[in-house]
Every structure is written in C-alpha cells, then in structure tokens.
Image (cartoon, rainbow, N blue to C red; front, side, top):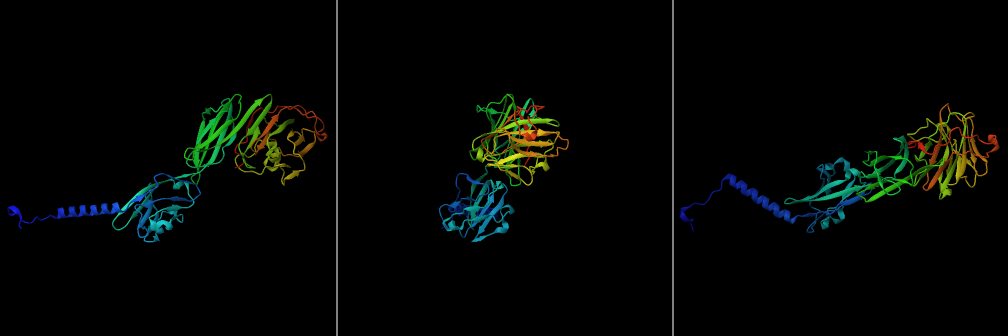
Length: 429
C-alpha cells in the first residue's frame, strides 16, 4: 500500500544517519553496562604499614572474569597499579612504585572476584583506587578506599633547658602514619598548650612529631605527653616527673626505654675546682631488673649522636644492668657487688682529677676513676635512666663517713646540687 497524500519514501541525510548510529551505539553500551556491574566493599579497607593488604572488588551478578580486561588504577594519579587481560598479567603497564608488589587473586576470578593483593604496604599506598573491568561491549568501575596506618614509638620526654622562667620539656615520637596529634596533660588531666610543635616525614613516609611545653613553678605530679592517632583510635603516653623540694631533685620516667637510649640528663651545676659530693638514691619497683647509670661528664660531651659512654668520650660513671654493676671503662669492668647498692655517693675531685663512688650504706669504696682527663673543662653530674618505674633521686647533703681511701670526710660541697636537672639533649641517636 502506498503512502498517503502522494508522499514518497523518506530519505535520511548523512548527519541524521551518523546521529542515529551514535544513539544506537550508546544504547548498546548502556545495555552492556547494565549486564556488567562492579561492586566495591562500601567501607574503607584498613591495613598496617609493612603488612599485606587486599582490595576487594567483584562482579554483580556473579560471572566468570577470567576472559575480561581487569585494571586497578590509582584514582589520584591515574596510574596503573595492576593490569590483567585474558589470563595474563601485563606488568609493563604498571607504575614503578608497585613493581613486584601486586597480584590479582586468581582463586576467585571464575566466580567474579577481582580482588587485588598489595604486599609490603607503604604510606604512599594510602588513598583511592578504581577497580575497572571491561570486554568488547561493556565497561564498569568501582571505587575502593585504602587507609594505611602505622603506630609510632612511645613518646620520649627530655628536658630542653631553662626558658621564660621555667623548664622547657620536649616530647618526641616517630613512626606514625598518618600525622598524629600531640597533647600535653598535667596531673589533674588538664590539657596544656604547646609552645611549639613540628613534624617531618622520613624516606618511608612515616611521621615524626615533636612538641614542647614550658613548666614553671613547682610541679605536682607527673607531666604527661600523649600522641594520638584518630584513624587508629590508638594513643601512646609517657610522663615525666620533675619536682624540687628541700634540696632534693627527682627525675622519674614512666615509659619503657631501651638500654643505651637517649634518656640522659646533665646536672645544672658546673664544677671546675675543689671537691664536690652528692648522694644519688635509686628508688622504684623491680630494682633487680633495672637499668641506670650515675657519674659525671665534661661540659663538651656529645649530645647529638651515638657515643660509647667511656672516659674517652668525657663520661666517668657506673652503670647497672639488671643486677650487674660495672664501671663505664673500656673494656667494661664488672664489679662483684651483691646486692647492687641503691644509695651511692658520687665524689668529684677536680684538683686530683678523680671521680669516686662510695656505698652510702656502709662507706665502702665501689670504684675510683684516677687521672681523669678533665682538660680544664667544667664537669657536671650525669645521669642515665633506662627502665620503667625507676627514679634517681639527687641529694645535696654531705656524707659523714667515707672510705679511708679518700682521706676521711668529704668537705661540704662548694656549690650544692641543683634541685632541677638540665638536659643532656638527644645524646644517643
């Protein structure tokens, strides 16, 4: 039957034909996309630096993915993390940072699983990823968020010198990701403002954070530094107790330290001549398992890098490690004393260039450094604390009885020991 009104068959122009072709192609792609759907986990994937992590992704509805083109891409940089096609891993297209660190979990491919495993996670792996899949007719993608975290070290507290009428206390912790918070708290749990706070990243991308607070007046109870990760909902806390009353100085640490860590302090007073004595008492729990050292050091002692604590480096001291007392000579000289004295007189003779240590309980000499090379420098009390729950208490009174080797009683100190201790700085790193 012909067309009404004498009309002929319609003829499409070239432009109309192209438009129709595009519309049909788009329709077919949408129909194909409806048949190819990718689903991510919905929630962020959390993992720890150094461990392996799996980014989950799967086809819905379930279908065999072994013949598909699967590509994982960093969303921020549009970089190929891993590419799989027709049973082959195409590593040449992979960005260098992920070389030899990724694999598509093959066990689930036949069931539509597109999971990607990343080994040895780094802070730089943190962020969004696109899980993409396609074939000749369809394409689909999903976003997967990876949150990488690392918990850092226990905060290390140290004294940073006198400032603005008080003592500057420093807190430092390293090995965190992402950047944590650093907070100060007094004995009543009240937060104190930091006077300074800095942070840096190491070559691995982990953060080190350092803060400072000025403590003025008499401090009652511990001063605490807390480093907190909001992502991990974890925190690490350390405290330092500084108190000075009636000529007594106390410095105690409530955080675990490793032996030969940088937990040293120097006495504030400097001595160049005369004889000076002070009593150091070791207090706390688990004394038999404690680590500490007492003695003197030259003013020029190295503060910023590792040194071998010995007279050659300007340190004359005794050290206790879990019940073994030794002089810090080289080689080390173990002293056969049981039990280890916990009340020790340290006597400095600048004229004779000698440093002697006496058991305060019985007046017996423990050890004497002779011919000490002070080199005309000022000499300061030196202390090392290496164990949780231990205190070194400094007394400024004069011993009544001493070893006969010292020729009787020690004269009154020319300058009493300070009720506050100054820093040795980050002496051993």
